[in-house]
Amino acid sequence: MMGKRTITGLLVLLAAAGLIGWAEDDVPAEKERVGGLAFVDEVEVTVVNIEVFVRDKDGVPVTDLGIDDFEVFQDGEQRKLTNFMLVDKTVRETILDSRSTALAKEPTEAGTPLPSQPEIRPVHIVVYIDNENLLPFDRNRVLSHVRDFLADTVGPGVEAMIVSNQGSPKVIQAFSSDPQELGAALRELRRGTGGRTSLQSQHAALRRDLVRLANEGLDRDGNSQKAILALEDLISYADQVQAELVRDITAVRMLGAGLTGLPGRKCLVYVSSGLPMVVGKDLFYQFTNYFQGRSMLSLSARYNQRAEYSDLAAAANSQGMVFYTIDARGSAPASGISAESGVSGDPSADAIYQMNLEQPLLFLAEKTGGLATVGTNNFEAGLDRVREDILTYYSLGYPITSAGGDRVHRIEVKLPGHSNFDVRHRRTFVEKSMESEVQDRVMTALLFDVDENPMGVEATVGEPSAAQEGRFLLPLRVSFPTESVALLPEGDTLKGEVVLFVSLRDSAGKQADLQSRVQPISIPSAEYARMAKLPLSIDLQLLVVSGRYRISVGLFDRLTRQSSYQTLATSIPEN
Image (cartoon, rainbow, N blue to C red; front, side, top):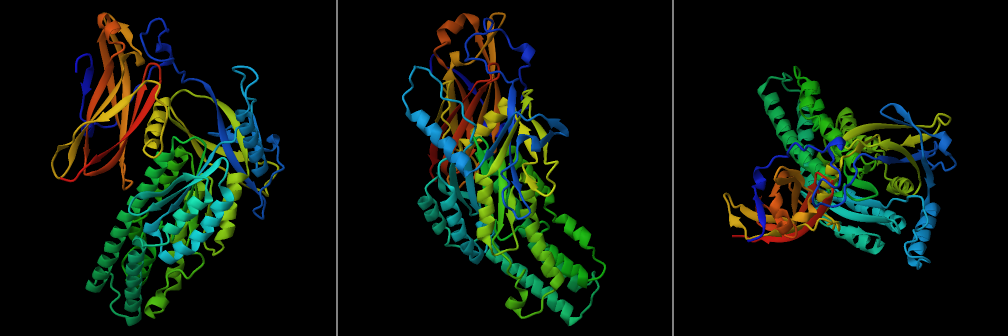
């Protein structure tokens, strides 16, 4: 097309590029650059806000502390608090009501700002029903409690979303503050089964076989044919569970990535029938307890998932997500072996089984500053504690000077004069560069509309063409006005640089990894006046299969640090 510069590339061949930034000393004066939007300063003083939950020995929120009662440490160094507020339901409603009233009033003078108010950040609750790790009976008895919890919690400033893991996360109900909408979505989830039902039957059969071997008193040599066959069955089962568990953990992490760009607090109410810290730990215990010459440590080490859960917790902290985990098994017998087979179970193996499934739930809650409800049938009390966290907490803030890079900081909050109180908070926060924040917004736009496009970005797709193995190449063009990008003179040429971020998500909830492309821009100085109002374009090819997709793009001007976002939907028909 005449008058349009096109930059081509193949997205599927791109790796995440090493991204460089403009050093502050390199930022040119306004008169030196051509085009672009206003410069956004990345080196600035910002306030880190931390939600701190303080409870007495009975679990009741403590609400009479002052700013001098708290000490906050970042990376071991004490920080001076500049912001302090106790937030409870009354404070929340008062501030939100006054803000709504101020917005509704006509200003007395044009441009008169609204009165300053303490910050009440919106709360986004994600109820994650992990059907792949839930037994139907466990799920259905918890859902009614979750419905009551939401009815008493959502409202102004607090909304919830219902997500079900059905091989991949599926949004059953988008964010809403309507208890009836949320309740209807939860009722929809009472039907159907998940992967845990089949795996539970396999687990019971393996436990039963090991108990019978022990009762028969046969050859206990760990290298016998019988031992080798029994171990092969255990390893086959553990490999299957581990593969599915890694998939399910990845699904939670990807969901969190999609929520990262949402402003405010993010709480994940995660419901499952427990998750294994070591896949098959009780089975390996029974096996090594009976067959001699086999090491429990070597078998368990292969299936230890602590690193996966640590990565998930670290990602959640980076995403601002707090885990509130619920073990829907309650206080029921650990494995049900006796009821299923009539064979006496191993009490030690039963205890290992129970604790092994609880450990990840406790771990994720503790590492993200949340709560775990395990080993109890009193789900109402557990959800009451979650509600108290959402509605009652201390907001502490202290200033930091952002250097523009990504850094992970350790946080510790102390109450020197109140050792009898329980203090919870997130253990880390991630200081992010603007480029990282753009990536977060692109991933968030796969789930939610992001209305932010000052650079006038327009994304369009062309006709897909067949590739190999049933896949298609989908042309994607990202266009933007030349004048929206800042350029610097170099001899007879104007040069700049943008970074394009792209991701996509299908209707089943599967989403692609974020891809990035660093794109230099070079225009002859003599041509700029003619081209300023004309668009530049970057052409890419997306490798996809048949289905419906939401595509999210973000464009970042490295010089001004301005960013823009655009989403579009498209379908790829079957052959």
